[in-house]
Image 1 (tube, rainbow, N blue to C red):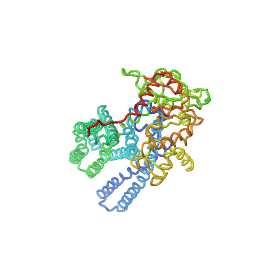
Image 2 (image 1 turned 30 degrees about the horizontal axis):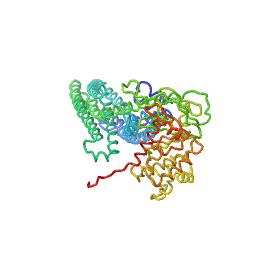
Image 3 (image 1 turned 45 degrees about the vertical axis):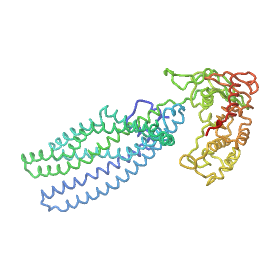
Image 4 (image 1 turned 120 degrees about the vertical axis):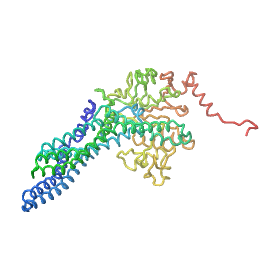
Length: 603
C-alpha cells in the first residue's frame, strides 16, 4: 500500500502524513481549513471598523453618520460571518480528523497482522495499545484544531502586520523586531535537535509507563504476594521515576526561554508606546495620532495568535515523537509472499531440513530451537510431537502457522512452500488449539464464532461437539453472556473447550493440538477426547503432547530433543526400542503413581 511505502522512507513531517492519509478528501480538508481561516480573518474586520469610525470622528467631528453606521453594520456582519465560517470549517476539519484516525488505526492493525509473533514478544500489549490509542489520538487535535488555528493565526498576523504597516511603517518594524526576538526564544525550546530528542524520550517514557502498568495490573496476584520486591512493580516505579526526571529536566531547560517568549509577546506595548510617543512628538498631526492609537489597539490583538503558536508547538512536538513510534512499527518487516506457481495438492505437511532460532545471528547466546529438522505429517493421519520442555515441539507447530519464518530449509503444505501461500489462505487451512487459550472480552457466541458469519445453530452444534454446551447454558445469559477480562471468568478447562468449539466451527483440513487436554479434569477428559476424535477425523492432525497416554494411538510419534529428531515410530515400536520415548513413558508412569506421604508420628 502507498501509505506503508511512504512511512518506510525517511521520517516525514506531520503535514505530509496527514495529507497522505486524508488523500481521498484532501480538497475537502483544504476547503475546511480555508473556511476556518476566513472566519478568523472576519474577526479582524471590527478593528478596521474602529479605525474608520475613529477617522470620521477626527476628520468630520462625527457629522458623517452614514459612514459610521456603515462600518458598524460591516463589523456586525463580519462577526456573524466569523461564527458561520468558523463553525463550517471546524465541522469539516473534525470530519476529516476522525476519518484520518480511522485510516491510521486500520493501517496499523493491518500491518500488525502481518508481523511475526517475535515482534509481539519484544513489545508488550500495553506499549502497542498506547501507540494505537494515545499517539494516533493526538492526530485529531492537529487536524481539527492546530492546522486551522495555526493557518488562521498566521494569516491574521499577516493582516495585522500589514495594517500596522499601512498606518505607520516604523511602528510595524518595531513590532516585527519584538516578535522575531520572541520567536528566537521559542526556537530554543522547540526547534533544536536536542529539544526534539527530549520529546522523543518523553514519548518512550510514556510508552514504558503504559506497558509496565498493564503488566502490573495483569500480575496483581503476584504483586500482592511478593509486595514491593516484585519485579513488575519495580519496573513500573523505574519508568515513573524516568518520566518525573524528564518533566523536571524539561521544565528547567524550557522555563527561561518560555518566560522570555511570553514576556516579549505580552509586552509588545512596552516597545510600541515609546516609539509611538516619539512619532507624535516629531509630527503631532491628526493622522499620526490616529495611526499610533490604532497601533496601540492592534498590538494586543497579536497576543492570541502568537501565544497559539507556542501552545501548539508542544503538542506538535509530542505528535511528531508519537508518529516516530508508529513509523517504527510500520517499518517492521512484514512477511512477504513468495511468487510460486505450485498448486496445493493435498494436506501433507513437510519439513525439509528446517533450522530456526528465536535469537538473531548477531546474538552471542544464540541457540537453535530446531536444527535441520526433516519430517512428514501425512494427510488423514495423526502425527504426535513429544519431548522434554524446550525440545522444539511448540516451535514446529508455530512455524507451520508462519508465526516466524524459518532460518534455513522450508515447510510445505501439499507440496507448496508456506511462504508462497497468502496469510489469509494459510490461516483458513489450519486450525490450532493452543495450550493457553485467549478468551476475548465478548459474548460466548462471538468467542466461539470469532465474529465470523455463521448461524447460531452452527455455533451451538460446535459447542455441543466440544462438550461445552452444558456449562454455557448454566451461565447467566447463556450464549449471550459476556466473558473474558473484567467479566465472568472461565476455568482453564472451560476456556480450552471454547477453543475446541472454535476449531470445530472452522473445520480446517489441518488441525494442530498443543496439549489440548492440559486443563481438563478427570470428569470431562473422556468427553473431550471423544470430541477431539470427531474433530480430527479425515484431517491432517499434529498433536504436541506432554501426556504420552493421550497419543498412544497416533500413526507416527516423533521424539525431539534439543531441536533434533532422535526417534520416530508408533507407540509400540518406540517402547520396543528402549530409548528416549520409553524413558519419558516410565517417568510419567512413576509421576502419576507418586503421592505425598506423612511419616508416622509427624503432625
